[in-house]
Length: 126
Image (tube, rainbow, N blue to C red; front, top):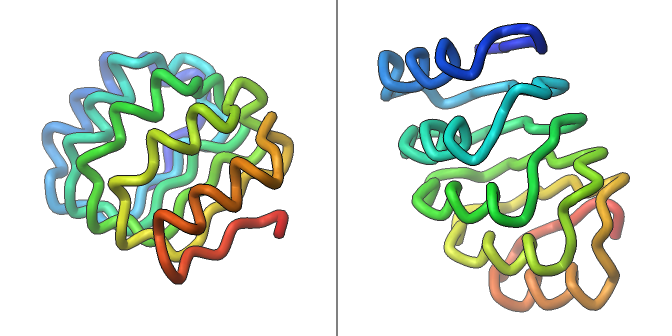
């Protein structure tokens, strides 16, 4: 499912509740997404791919994704507010194999710490 900017967060939350078995969700560029919306996304435990690039996701918002244990691919490209602190919120995502953090405010040390916590994880940029 691809959702684009302009859709109210309440509608996104409603979609998340109505599509509990969804495996792919693309919210690239959705600027209306707050911690509440990410909490709804975090309840979609069957997600294997999630794109949040070019949104206003923060470190605090990433905490809401902690139950997405089936997630294998996460794109946070150009989420400028995501730092090494936010990466540490992802340590529960043990199925994660690909993470895209181009344009985020992360360091090599922060990325390496997350890779150490999740064996087999590939983080771009390397």
